[in-house]
Length: 155
Image (cartoon, rainbow, N blue to C red; front, top):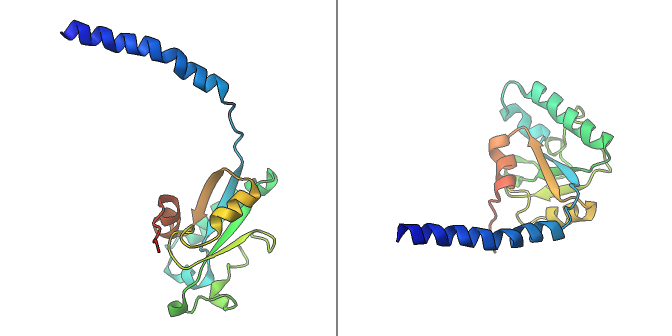
């Protein structure tokens, strides 16, 4: 019985392998068109960030420079929160001047940790033609992780 099972498994692999190879050969690979999401680097949140935030800002700015150098989009994501006074137009809502974002960079406002949850982020990404995302921010275990993971609220 064991020999029969082994034979059938090998036979299945031999029969199925050409169809897998054919499927891969027929589908041309789509080129990678990345976008950089810069998430919640707002003045109101900076005091709560870890002590090495200046070094992190250097890395984030280097990523922004790299994306711009290659013509890839940089998308700004902002958290709004009435409870903390982080609302559009308030000083705490804005990114510090040290972050190399531009007023022409697409901007998304969110009220949940996940940048996709009840926002137009997906539409903005598709508008840029991007199919691959790189995420950065000062709270990698907060909103960056929630955006990557997809903590969406339905309803």
